[in-house]
Length: 264
Image 1: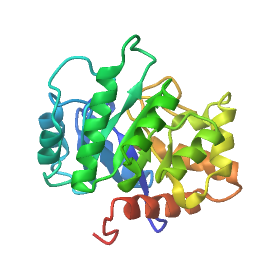
Image 2: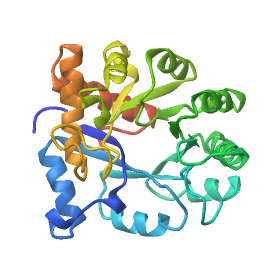
Image 3: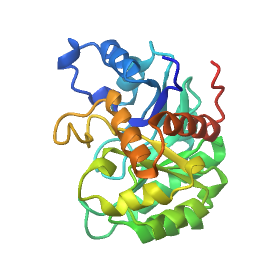
């Protein structure tokens, strides 16, 4: 296609429902390409699935990966800073995460999440690779730890952002980009729509978080990378511009953040 391809800046390709694609990830990525998606960032959530995830996406040169342990992971291997740094040296790894804090499912003493988060930030600073931040019901502690650990030295992405404009401004001040998922298309998501309207376009990204959080008109169904087009189109409507303009700028933002050569 002639228009600038979109980037799905956050997806979990190892968890996609591939039944509509005969079990073939390549077909799912072809479908995404037909919808205007040129590159994808496949995000790690634990150490146990990391080798399989990498093997699945290795054949596709338009898929980047990350290394990290999701804040909700309560079992499995807990990597040290050194392990995260070593794993991040593998080909195609461009980010550390997803990491952060989530108090929605976990209650009580959250020191273990704080320590895990700090280790990920330390690894990002050692490697110079941006962070992918997950923040749910833990706004103040997340932003406080980011500030205390100088996460802004490497910056990164506030993934699946659902907070208000005041919180968005604080994240922007910490040198992070804001990524919008399918939630922005939900009728009741006025707070997030407001942020999408106000955001400096050069600090914005779009994502699916596939297979979760499918946008309207597929809300409640299994999500897939092709649907990031609906996120871009809705943001374009909110901002009174074309989806191609959103695609062009968010793609440029992604490649700038990760210091990637868009011509390759």
